[in-house]
Length: 394
Image 1 (cartoon, rainbow, N blue to C red):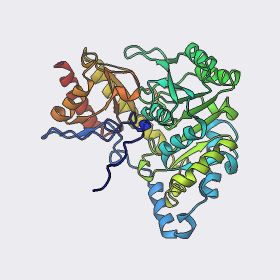
Image 2 (image 1 turned 180 degrees about the horizontal axis):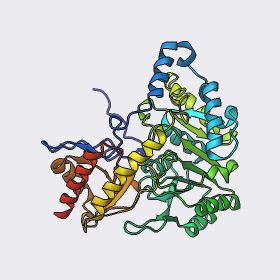
Image 3 (image 1 turned 120 degrees about the vertical axis):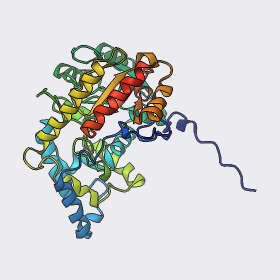
Image 4 (image 1 turned 180 degrees about the vertical axis):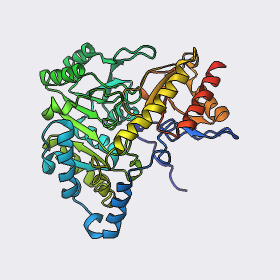
């Protein structure tokens, strides 16, 4: 008789994929159009046609694209380096400071693995992207929350608790990880907060990992401040075309960091995936040079959906939400569901044909859910009204 497999190492116990976006498996209500707010709908917002052409051409080309150095094709990194240097306002050496990764998710894992040691304390913004905390815990380090103060009613700027960040750095943490625009609230950090993060990192000899995946999709002509422009030697920037540009299916991302960090990431990538898929790296060739007006129209279309959902939810006395400043996420407060958010999420799916992501994925938020509103416009509005109806019965 074969021996039973050994129990999984304890570091796996807190990863938990059951409630992660896209993993919900409960039955969906019939007779209604299912809207899956756990991720964007690339049918409603397809990739730029230039991406389809570039990837198809790369596959037909074969040899030039199939295999790359572990950190990516040099000609792709040259293009990306030039464009990201102009975008972020800081010079980039594409040979030593750029690595192409299997999506920004893969880049995040490589980045934190290159920076975090067992037993470290790592400053993690709350709320923020669910994988930040989970990867830190998997690496047997301790995430230390730093609150992002935001309002679900009113128009005050979201602000990071910088006094708390100073305290965490003073206590010994030497790494901060956060997203800007923030996932899940859609808040965009003020220039003052970004500059102060850079100043604190310098004061305490700390490093910062910033996920700027949605930094091209900012609404209302709001200014966006790139951390890299203020802390080039102390930050790693993750960015890619998977969200705003709907290229998630290609699984390509980019990390820009000091050479020694990129070297570590390359070593790890060499034993995890070898490289980002060679053919799919061609999806980065049209990045930032899409047809004139393409990006402007995409932002306009998302702003219209945002505004309509905000109007629907804002009219409800049972829900609270914040006007998204960047990206395509909306963090919905459901006070009546506190302590029973899993039941609320299941009810939305089984009675209203709506899938959302539970708030506890993003920190200690037991009465919230996240929606990705990159959806068919009318379908999203109809689904929002069904969410209001379900919340009114709680």
